[in-house]
Length: 317
Image 1: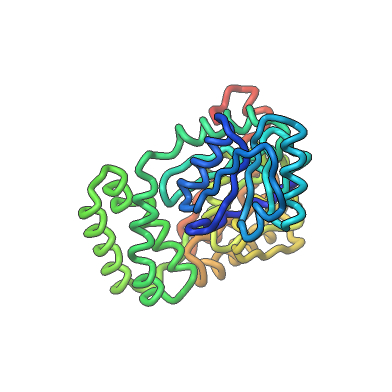
Image 2: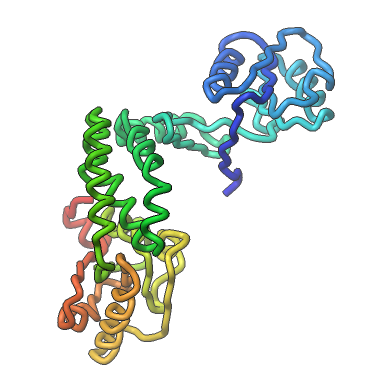
């Protein structure tokens, strides 16, 4: 990762925009939309004093010499700056942005290909509903109540997953905010009366070790799982697709014999008593452990990976 993505609160903070024309106007409009106090400088000469006290600076004069001079002035004032179309002069770069109110997605190629970033933004724009920010606001409304009511982190995550994917979220996306709140209150009341559930385990096939061959559902399950069980045949590239805060447990038992499968089934049993969502990563697509877990009443989902052979045979993504 060449650049670290960070989101700054610019409300009420001074941001300097140097230059005039379309590029400077776009940058001024962008930071103003985030609540910044925008100071425009169109003078052909700028000094370090023009930048002192500013949170950030955007330079877009369209002239190489003027851009370089303004960059030096901002640097001497200790203000981080972005220079339009001159990545070598930038302290930070501007990503392609998908804005859904509270939900903001930033896509960057590190300056390598702004066109590619724009294409990716278009794909993400098409995938995210216009009212997705309403779902985020709904979750924020109930955050304090949920945190006070549900103290176990795994159960709390499961509640919020239901909230943002279930009936309340669908009502919010449809524009029925009052109905969404009523549905969320119903979910909260159900959680108040709910005993800790037995977890559900998903056995996820890691395929030949290429993370791009995970199915979309398998990748989603790795992101949702509270605990990841795996053996040492599963490569790090696959494990990297799991949620960062998921509990991980690895061992050297492989699934090539019956005893190992029984042992892995009991691993699922132990994890299901503690977590709501468990993913057991299996090298290749062997599904050891499922029979043992089923025997003891654990709901187990099987998620094989795609393989190059299956894809060549026309398997859908």
